[in-house]
Length: 63
Image (cartoon, rainbow, N blue to C red):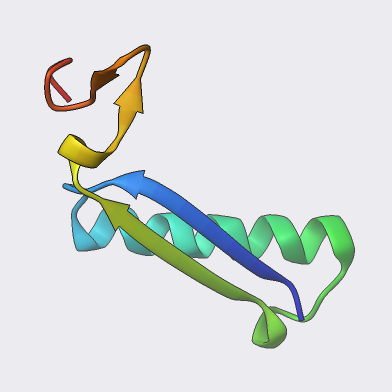
């Protein structure tokens, strides 16, 4: 049972997250031949104040 964990800065819409889940599931299905019913995808949303990029928070960088 493949399990994909995706970490993203919060703020995506439900439709965007739905698309990520669908596309990651399809990619794993195609890459390893796992039945779609066995694939799990977890999206963890991180506040932009807790996400660092080049020594600054993503929020301070305008994300």
